[in-house]
Image 1 (tube, rainbow, N blue to C red):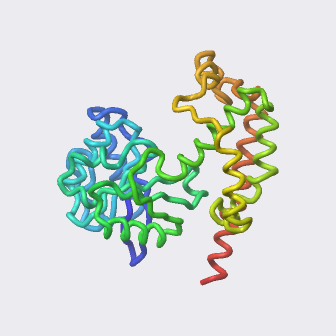
Image 2 (cartoon, rainbow, N blue to C red):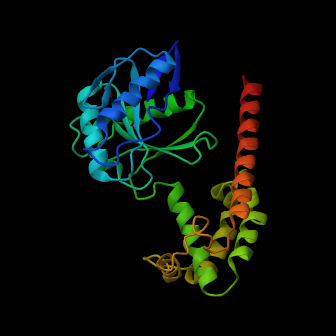
Image 3 (spheres, helix red, strand yellow):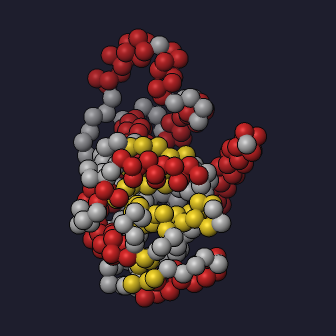
Length: 290
């Protein structure tokens, strides 16, 4: 929930868990909400049917499981229990925002806010404009998230995967195809990404890089590359086979790599340490600009 306390906009995490079905756990879920609000010292809102109706909420961000009926029910309840100008946002990473809000009469205030994991360390939030989302809703959401220290961007069309996941899975489709074709193994592919173009992605985006080297050169390279790239419209057979065999990755000890609890923990620690260092660097830069 985004609310204003002492003149400051903040994102309050309403609960660490949500009911797994539309009929399960609403009373406990509501109790969790109230307990956290009391702990924060924030004035209580009215609770009806497990959802918060608030006179101070600027916006509510839903982060329930990726089940469309559940999300639609939550939004239906939120519409009834929040003020008309309260923004209703969904943190879905896959479901269309238009579908989530299709039963909401005031769908002009429904918007997507796709945070990236881990959200406390990665600043990006994709603010998704659905078919009936009003532009002022998008603008207010972006302003509120920016005030909370996030890095919001405007996704102008409600398409599957928004922006980030479309880019991520376009690369992942090609990566899996390369391994499946025997061009290299998984470890070599990851080295190419991490020690090659991936090393500059955090400081130079693909559009910037195209301008840097020249759009004409990008065109010449694509004339050669595009016909050779994977164009599959279904998941890779290799991926399907691995899942059928139970080779799910770190959780099962085998995926594209073989994992032990120790090697898996080491990777998680490496990722966390790097993300923490980057977050601290961003915070230091913001303080320097203040």
